[in-house]
Length: 156
Image 1: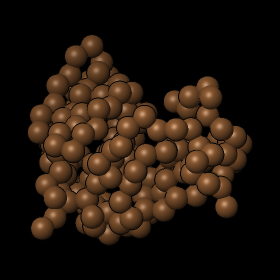
Image 2 (image 1 turned 180 degrees about the vertical axis):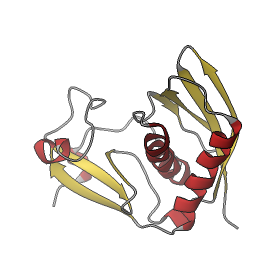
Image 3 (image 1 turned 135 degrees about the vertical axis):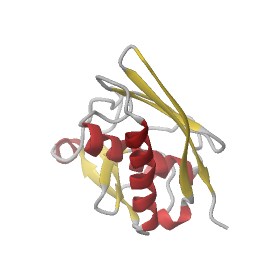
């Protein structure tokens, strides 16, 4: 078993529901628009934002569909699992282009059911049922960058 202490140190403590929601949003954007995972993200407890490189701004119907799809995944009550693999094994499953140069040879993969997998050292929920509802607050588009601002409404 690989100890978490052997991974790169993490520079902040995410809010697990929001951070896991970011994973779901990224995979939703990939599936809907064929883009890469967010190029820039600022994930916080109250409100977060992700930037995606897109050739045009999604229309209102597409914005609503992003929100609907993310909430469908959350409502599916998917398990969130962790696995440790070699960098070589990970490269066959996920994009490692954002990996820091000093990343170890053993990587931590985070699986959101069978919906998403990515290399990540952050904090996550154990099941998507713990996330709450995903709500798009606003969006903008400038110079090929689509910025999506969102929050989650916590379950009661």
